[in-house]
Every structure is written in C-alpha cells, then in structure tokens.
Image (cartoon, rainbow, N blue to C red; front, side, top):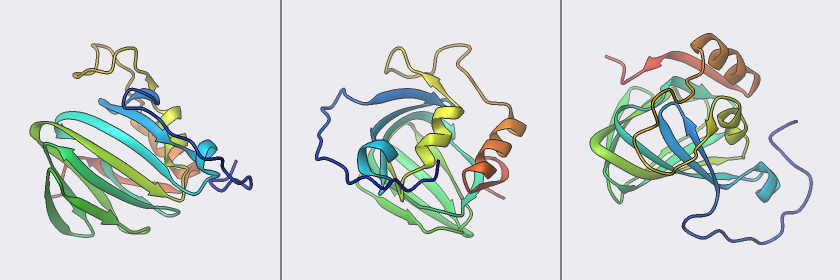
Length: 168
C-alpha cells in the first residue's frame, strides 16, 4: 500500500479520549488522523512521553514531519540545528532533513503530524496496543529490534541514521 489513498475522505471528529492508542518506542501515541481517515493526505498523532531520547536519528524521504508542543518541552535536532521547543512551540521538518527529538521536561505531550500520511503505518508495525493511556510505558512493553525497525522504516521511505538521542 502506498501512503496516498485515492478515496475522498469523509468529515470526522474524535473526542479527547478517542483514537488508536499504541506504545511506540516507549511513547504513548494516539492516532487521531490516519491514512485511512484522511485519504492519505495527512496524519496526526498525539504523543505523550517521559524525559529522555524519543526517536532514533532518521530522515523521511516521503513526508514532512512537524511537532506542536502542548505540555512540557522537547528539543528537536534537525539538519544540524538544535531547536528548543517549550509548550506552545511549533517545529517543522521538511522531507530529506535528518532529525531526532528528545523530551527534556519530566514529561511532554505533543502533536506529531506528517504530510502526506503513512508514517503511522510504520508506527503500527513497530508498536503494541496501549491498554492504559498513562505513563510510563508498562514493564515489558514491546520494543522493536533495531535491525527490524531499520528494515521496516526503509520499506516506508525512512532511513535510520543513528541511535536515539541528540547527535554530539
């Protein structure tokens, strides 16, 4: 399946507790808009994460990615620049720009968007359903093997360039 759907999406709305909640790389990610619901146009995910590295260094070849910080603080490393992002901040990462992010507050809540949609499909493959939408992730929550994550990411147009954490 490509990231672009051909059907015209129908209007929809989700409440604060609605959406598909999943544990992805230790983060609670709730899918609010997906390939299926937007006809592939965009994806929107509400993320909650505890302090620490949140994603491996990677680059999207197909989609732009952005963050809007609702609570707490993130630091985004993108294309060699460090961007501090406290609550109320917006950070945009165009395609083909290496990036990663870390939560620098005790906890953060943020919106993660991609355009076009498709990244959430990789997230589904490398995560598990969240039974309870609270942090921290339960003991023994699924963590994908780095080699498998790299292989699946490549299939979705994403290149893993390094481990989680900001480059030195």
